[in-house]
Image 1 (spheres, rainbow, N blue to C red):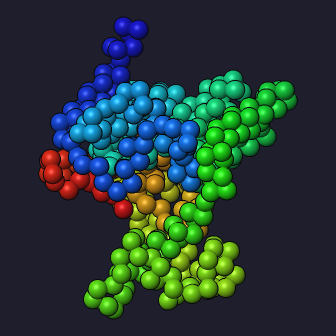
Image 2 (cartoon, rainbow, N blue to C red):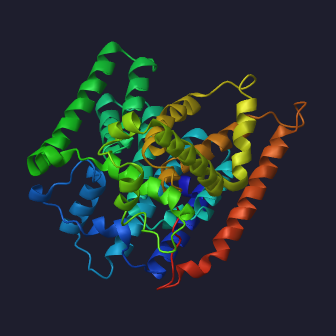
Image 3 (cartoon, helix red, strand yellow):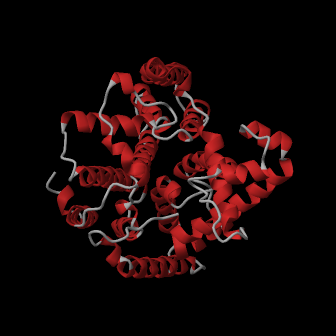
Length: 397
């Protein structure tokens, strides 16, 4: 145990964690927008629905029930709790995949300078934590019941993640080398845990346990995409009054099915706008680091995909509901950020050394990382004023 705390990357993690904790605890922020869920106190009569995000609400509910922080410190408690889970799970995942402690430290620097540990919405950090834990379970070949539990927790942090959890389950069953009995046990445990988690929700919410949130999400995001192009000086707020846009553009639509069947051309327009917005936000989050993704693709012939890359690739199915129903917000990509940066760090580690190989691509990769870190540091220190009490906090799109 003493040797672990003497390792450079562990010491750097402790420094990053301490600094993040100091920022969160030293610069309190008000509860705003969807962060209101942290006021939830667990009760079977008020059990959360699937659309609400069962696991995120249960974390808040049990914490408020047994710890019961004061109203003044509630937001700090949850932002600290979410940051702790996010940084810890991401670092543990990195230690499984990346061997070079220097690259681990670079990963931690990216994690800190991304400002994601200070995200205003704790559910996104809870989601990223569950995502990292599920990847750890897959890589470490956890026993079927533990892996099933991790996947169920992932599936219920946010509604769209049931696709990711199911995809990971399918990969573990059909593509991982394991005994037939283990595969059957994994599937049965996944279904069993899911049913046990959903039963109280069905009792409390009835038919409303699975709501129609998808259509509302589409309405708000489509309205937000067309809002900047409105000629009216006082156009309706796209988030508070999306019906104003839907009644004019999609008058007969009451569901996603109606949109596709009755307005296919307009829905296709939405998809193209969603793709453009998603690409813009991807560049916004990763900055210069995004330059390494095409470089990795170019090396597929010489450097086949690793097991970690295949597993992360399977999880990209989670982008489908982003594009079909909304668009990829920066905060939505919080769950993918640690895995993507780890993937690039592990690929850089595998590149041949310039002294031994004929290519200097490894130097280019490190130079790109250096530029990306410098730019992230510039953004981080430029926005320090946003940490002040009462000031406007970093609100990613």
